[in-house]
Length: 237
Image (cartoon, rainbow, N blue to C red; front, side, top):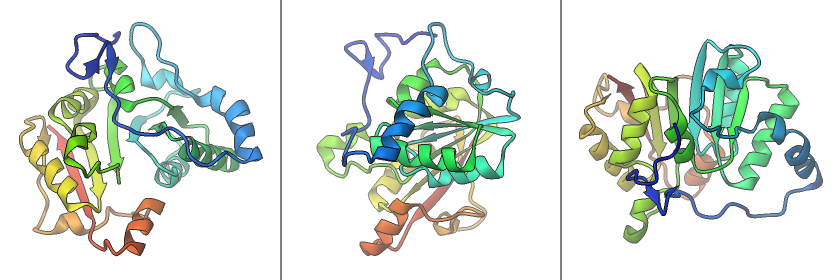
C-alpha cells in the first residue's frame, strides 16, 4: 500500500507530522557511532507496495507490537528483553531518544527490535490490516496550546488507522499525566466503535499497568508536581 495523497491524514501528499523538533543536544561519540553502525541494520525503510512487519525480523516472531514515541526507550527495551519471541517496532523521531534506545539494544544484544525514525503515521499507513498484536502510546507530547491540538496523535483518523492494523482483541495502551489529554483521548475512544474501554472498577485507570516501571518522562512529571497519571487500556473489538 502506498500513501494516498488525498488521504485525510496527508498534507501536500505527505502524512501530517505529529511531532516538533528532531534533535536537541549533540550526540556523544559513542551514540554517533551507533547511529552510523547499528541503526542501519535495524532501521525500517518503507517499501513500495506495503510492509510485512513479521518479515522485518530474522526469525518470524510470535507477536508484533508497536510503540509510538518511545522517548528514551526504557519501556520498549524492557519488553524486548523479557519477550524475545515478540518483535517490537519503535517509532521515534527525536535523535536523543533514538540514541538511548540504540545503546540499550546494543548493550543487551536485542535482536527483536526494529526502529522507524520518521512520523509514526507514515508507518501505520503502510502496515497491513490486522498485523499488530499491541500498540503503546505512553506519555506523548500533550501539545497543550489549543492551536496545537491538531498535532496530538490521538484523533478520529489516527484511531481509525490503529484500529485497522490491530488484530481483534489486541490492546492499545495510552498513558499520560496531563488530565486534559486524558479527557481528550477518552472522549475520542468512546466515539470510536472499533475500541472497547471497560475498566474492572472506577478509578482503575489511575493504577499502573501490571509490571509497570516509570519512564523518565513520568519521573520528570513527578518531580514537577504532577502526581496523578492515567493508564488507559483499550481493546480492539
